[in-house]
Amino acid sequence: MANKDVTDPARMEKIVSLCKRRGFIYQAGELYGGLNGCWDYGPLGAELKRNLKDYWWRKTVQERDDILGMDGAILTHQDVLKASGHVGGFSDPMIDCKTCKGRYRADNLDNLECGRKPSCHPGEHKECELTEPRAFDLMLSTKLGALATDNDPKAVAYLRPETAQSIFVQYKNVLDSNRIKLPFGIAQIGKSFRNEINPRNYTFRSREFEQMEIEFFCRPEDGMRLTDEWLESRLCFYEEIGIPREKLHILDVPDGERAFYSKKTYDIEYEFPFGIQELEGVAYRTDYDLGVHQKGAGKPLEYFDEETKEKFLPHVVEPSAGCDRTVLAMICEAFEEEELTDEKGKKDVRTVMRFAPRMAPIKAGIFPLLKKNEEQVRICREIQKKLQPWMNVFYDDGGAVGRRYRRQDEVGTPFCITVDFDTLGENGEELKDTVTIRHRDSMEQERVPLDSLLQWLLERVR
Image 1 (cartoon, rainbow, N blue to C red):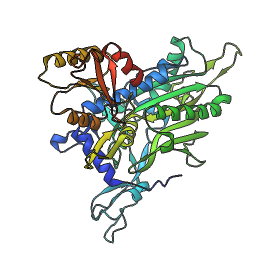
Image 2: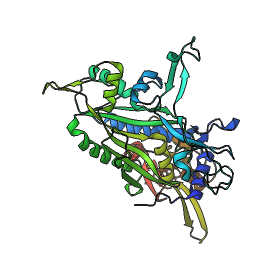
Image 3: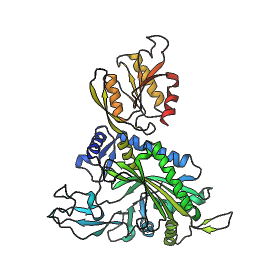
Image 4: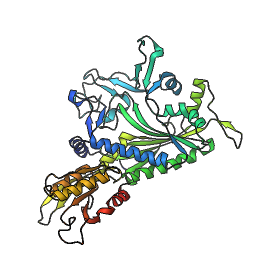
């Protein structure tokens, strides 16, 4: 097992710099000094995140017969969160430093810096004076309705702290409106909000974040088996998006550290440059969630088995992944500074993002060898028009082709297509109507006929 405390701050600094420089991620509200714990995804980051969500949805919902999708509201009825235990019970321990006026999570001081002396943890500096821990509510609330007042408790609603509760509340409606039997799941991708005391590690721990979550309903006797099956399924998914299994760690959360209602919880962790941290949890939540909502709403949520004539509350296995954390893991895994030596012995460093092709924000760069050659430009534009309905591509005619390659390497484009004089048949008929495709990872090149270009790419980017 790798050491969770091993970090590489210099590598992380380079990744953060590249993300801003090339338009992956920006600080939210940066023009006005930034909004702590909130992030905006730029053009490339939005594409990367969309590719991840689309692939997760395809593998989780479209390619399975036993999972349905939904999209729940972000604003959440307060009674939902009272029943689930979030209202009055969703908090972190917070302490203040009377000296530097900093506020910290009391259970995470070893990972934080003292406001007066960053080389120390809070409480270690001789002038530190920490208060006793107190509960800090993590939920963000608002008032609904034009006539709502601060003194009207019925007007309170919350920005949901997790996507799971809307699934549990709608479980019966989904069951009744679809011809589906146990075991079955409901999947959702959506925003959640937590008023974190100390947002940290770039986008890893934020106040606004996106989840990719499944609630898989089953018979009680199947819960433990399905938990193990879902763990393996999720590990395979990460491999498919470019995160190798050897960089993933499975924490079997021991008794006493799991949520009180969980009979089994696995944390899937990744080796970030800031240490090994959780990407996803796979938890066997038993029938706790449906039980508390059945009691809270006073309405039956039992499942009736037509074959056995049994009526019971289904148990739930929950694979819950952080979308933003997974995007960050893909970026960290893809980033590489590769030292190259040319034929003259001159050394150079190539910055390359080795995204899995299906995740890459741009699938192909399209270049005319000479931008002043009207026929090459015409063919490039035709290629661009043909590929755009199927994938995100980028036309570039600025500078030498080598520089264009490097620009695409830095944003992770797996293939670059060059239209040259061979394409026009000026060097013979043998290579006419073919293009050069250059591979990002190996930098090797091959010729592909124009009429099979789309199929060639689709086979490699899906």
